[in-house]
Length: 422
Image 1 (cartoon, rainbow, N blue to C red):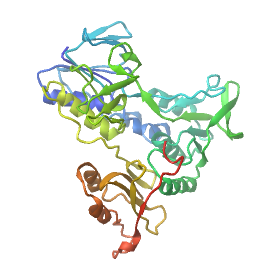
Image 2 (cartoon, helix red, strand yellow; image 1 turned 90 degrees about the vertical axis):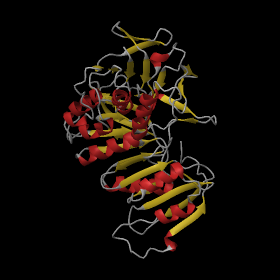
Image 3 (cartoon, one colour; image 1 turned 90 degrees about the horizontal axis):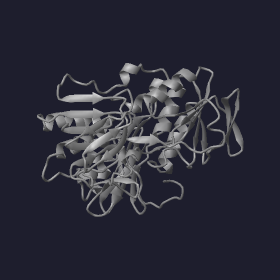
């Protein structure tokens, strides 16, 4: 075989399509451990809530292409980089000329007293688990979501809008702790509370109790919470255990260059499985859907280049609609950054950009995300972005006065507040 790609998430799918475009004479084999290929995982909360049908979850339908083969239900057991082969759990061996690794991540399962002995505990990670959740919960179910990151927040919101009773438990002091500072997090939390979601912040699940082998309640800081279903959304780790012994891992990480090339020049990697090291010695893990798409395309385009091109941006920009509250995250706050913000009087609105030495390092647009594209462009290319940031930070909502003045702009030197960021 010519090109083999492991993983059918956004990185793997886009890598496969780009390979067929960039290297039209090369055959491409896409290997996926799950039976379903090209599942849009961000939509799994809507599927669990009964708001979308399964056929709407797929963002990829294999085209009729004799040089593109999809092998689903084929889990990779090991990699021999010298022999240029993959060993599958089924015993099959797949050879390759070039390889792209895009296996994504696997969910973190916490160690909690009683978690293994009770039914009703599910990780929010893939279609098979989402189907189990959908078949398990009923309209009377009291559901606890563990984890207030992107996955946990979306899961809680969609299930609540479907009419379920939801409690969300987060270990940190605020929701979306890796992306939001206190000012923005408070507005998001108020939105959750208005929707009727019970929040348990700065807490975690300590133990469970059940009845007839099924979960009935969970304990958080000594307080018992009714719970007929526990959904685990506390994050993921790279799914790279099959690479142990391959020689590609360094300190347990799948290390790649800014061009997404591994230690082996014939093997590239992309998506949530990789740690990108830039020439300045810094490491980056920009695990977002947009990044996975960009990385998959670039890894494919670089496969046969004598001088592979580096990734243009390592930002972690992400957008989502919190059931009526728009949110765009440009990136997390860095200690010592300057905060340029606009805080209009309308409920729930906040626009912040973080500057360091004249460059945008992050920010958040909450309630009004106009200007997100130009701000992201400045984040990548702008060296002295301050003046343009102060122009773009003003919202353009009709409910605001058209004569916005500089009085609405607040500029200050920010301090890191303990516990705000992971």
